[in-house]
Length: 369
Image (tube, rainbow, N blue to C red):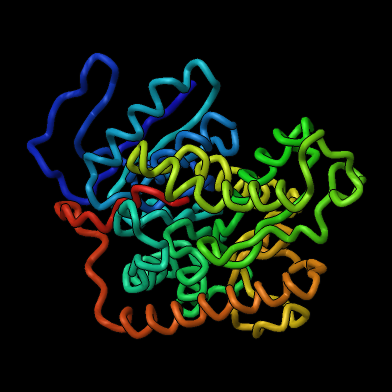
């Protein structure tokens, strides 16, 4: 059985009667259930995350917030229509921050649309993230926050700066999707299931990211020792896979589809599952760096960490060779410069994020990968 609840702070149109399916596009009382996952922003990525959470059975309750109540309702109705074929789920569409008050995880997807040819670092969403964190600190101070908005590493650091909650309860989607793309590509070339490819993309979720090849393995076998297909050599495979991973989202998918949402939605869902179920899975999320990485302990970039009920349960030291260490330091430098620039810009007052009549495009992130 599925339950759909719609809650507006202010009715935009005259109240309408229920239709034959029980959809009521006006004011309804908020649901009495607690917990679950809140999503801030019902754009392409926010809606895709909501759908993935329901399809993969990650949570029985999703609260989809958008200041445009009709957008949140439309996405919630579309997802809810399929729930009788899946099982029980409660989907709440709202433009009221208070409806996020009891969520265990808050996923933040708001931001300016990502245009073809842009770098993720060209997006400036710092002021918006600061405003969102003020709301979340007020209504859901104990929730683990997962930042998806770009530039994700920079915005995760800004969110940590802006929030009263412990830093380990704020993490970014990081390079979880980049790592999955790399595993899929390398597995295809080697004729091995992608789940047995153990290699991580680290650094910036962006142009300065890189695979940590020195620690890569196929099952228990180091990649350097794994038998390669005829006519292939290791250096060529590594170069091909790294380049394909870098261009997959911004060049290949965005140029054809106009946005990316499905892949990042699954990546975010797996992170959320690990929090809700305290799975202690290892993911390359945006988080603070250990001293061993020698990039500064306040630096936030995509590195392996154990994810559980408290967010980042443990930061993990990934062994890097000299070349990889240099690339990590370069990536950290790029992110530090972007953080300083974004911090300077985001000291300006943020645009309001809770007015139900606003049509400002900033509230909907159209791609997160």
